[in-house]
Image (tube, rainbow, N blue to C red; front, side, top):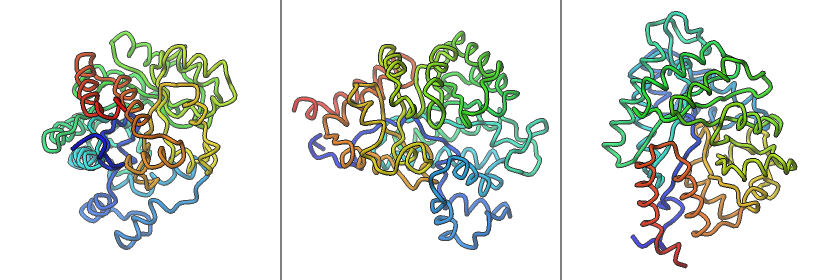
Length: 358
């Protein structure tokens, strides 16, 4: 297909910021809940569940995070389900033109073994965080084979769970490049940065494991500086509150830190105004920051990469050339080993050859 005929759906894409737990098909949640006999909130049908997942009161990050408590009890604590949802994610993104993506998740949230406090009240069992990583890896490998997509994973530390950080680092080391390529710090930025978090990122740096960090989504711009200088972050998740802080924007630009922007997500959590004309990404694009557009948690935001590219055109004035350059920026900032990353970039440059000549 000639490059000039790409639609928003078929346009080749790279997604760097999408949470596995927030990308589960409603059909899968419903099916698993029926098979495991675990009721999903007060929903009596798949259609009710589908609506319930998306139609929550927007404008508050805490409200958004609470949504996970409705369906995670039926998802957590199963190796089979962990493998299934990662496999299905490969299929779903392949249908949206995604050629490479990095899914991120917190393995402890999907486990239920002794010693892992059940955040979502999942029934006790014997599924360890390591079991979850193995299962997700299996799903990714099978998905890559069946859908012709390339996928990797990032393991998340949680700000409120510093006691899990050392184990997450060890899992990153054990499964480095199978399929784990990076480490992340997520959740409530109001929670202090614990020593355990810092040590885990230092350990990742020493082990050659890539680093990204949620920062300045709702918290202050200074969190970006902290992520770069104390956690050695190569990428920043969200970063919207950098707007108005020229010194932080300069730091990010000078160090070529990639910013993982999630347009729909930011307007639903209250991190940005619902009017896209006010979005921080306008300034980021004007400054020439290295950034990409991503979905974050598509199941709960009702978005897809196809829709995000539509938003890029309609609200950020981006054309095919802009989208191609943004996609190449994402590819160059991905966490693949150098040789694999270079092959991905060359593959995309070939797909975009006609566009980039215009």
